[in-house]
Length: 99
Image (cartoon, rainbow, N blue to C red; front, top):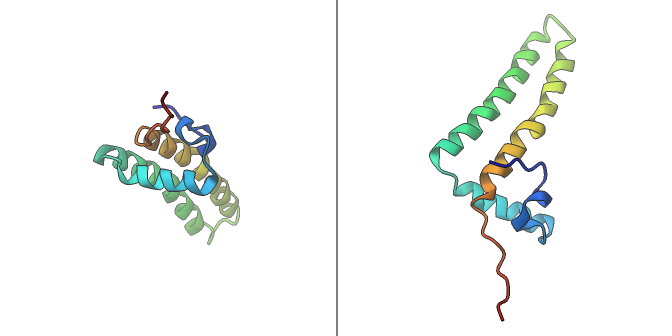
């Protein structure tokens, strides 16, 4: 699986505007099979759970909010490339005009 950090980097979507790229990703995400959805959801949980742990720790340690914010920044850096990589194989190749 190749990781894509932007929808512009997915070869099938390079020629499309942003709204069409996001729509294609949404359609492809609906085609993910069970194990792929499970992997994506576990990855999301591994990023989201520490955020809530740090928020709970804020009652005793105000520095926990800084860590919560830093971990929140990990979400798009970790989850989105995996999501785009999993969805890329379900996006059809653009149709080319024949002779």
